[in-house]
Image 1 (spheres, rainbow, N blue to C red):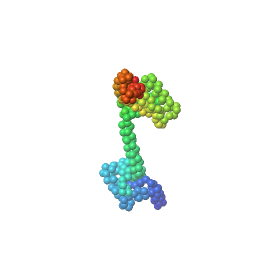
Image 2 (image 1 turned 30 degrees about the vertical axis):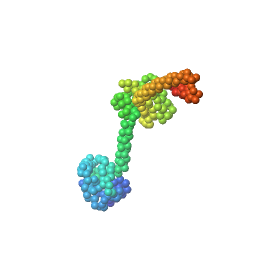
Image 3 (image 1 turned 120 degrees about the vertical axis):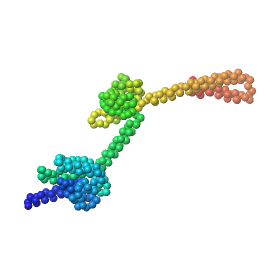
Length: 324
C-alpha cells in the first residue's frame, strides 16, 4: 500500500511540474493514446481536454490535417519506443484557431527497463522565430540582389591584398571567375606607382582609424588592358579577421566621354577662331575705308561714321582672348 501511495505522490508531483511548464506537454501511453496534457496545452485546445484522453495522438484535431505529418508522427512514435532515444523535429499544430509552428521532441518514459511505459511530447512555439528567420532570409536575398546589380565593383580583401569576396561587377572588372578572383592578390594587378599609392591609402586607413579613405584613381591590369578606376577603401567590420572593402568605379567610359567632349570643344574652338579672324579682317578693311573717305564725308554723316568706326575698333577688344 505504501508503495502505491509513493507512486501516486510521484505522479502528482510530476503532474504539477508539467503543469508549470510554458511549453506544450502531451503524455501518451505505450499505444500512442493520449493520457494527459499540461495546462499550457489545455488552454489552447478547441474542446475540453477530457475529450482527447484515450484518443490516438495522430488523430487529434490539434494536428494539421496533412496525412504526411500524421504518418510521420506515427513513425516517430514507434522509433522512440524502440530506440528509447529522443527525436526532435519541426512540426505544425492547430491551436487557438491558428496554425502554430513548433519544435517538437518525443521522449520515452520507462518504469520498467524492458519496455517504455509512456511517451512524453514537448513542443515549443517557434512561430515568431521562423517568421524572423524568413524575414532575415528575405532581407538577405534583397541585399544580395542590390549588391549584385550595383554599378560599382565591390571587393573584400585582406591586409596582404588577397581577395575574399567580390560582387558580379567586380568579377567583370577583373575579367575573372569567382574562383580565380579568390586566388588573386590585388597588389599584383597594379603598377609599382599605383601599388605605392594604394598602400599609402590603406596604411592611412589602418593607422589613423578612418572609416574610409578619400577616392583616388589608379589603373588595374585585368588581363586585356589597363583599366582606369576610382577606388575608395573602407574598414570592413569583421571580428574574425582584418578585412577591407574596396568600392571601385570604372572610369573608362567617363574618360572616353571626356575625350569626345574635348575633341568636340576643340572643333568648336577652331571654328570660332576662324569666324573671329574673318570678322577682325573685315573690320580692319572697313576701318581703312572709313579713313580713306574721312575727308569726303558730308558733315551730316560724320556721327554715323564715328559710330561705325567705334564698333570696328571695339569688336577685336571684346572678342574672347581664348580665340585669339
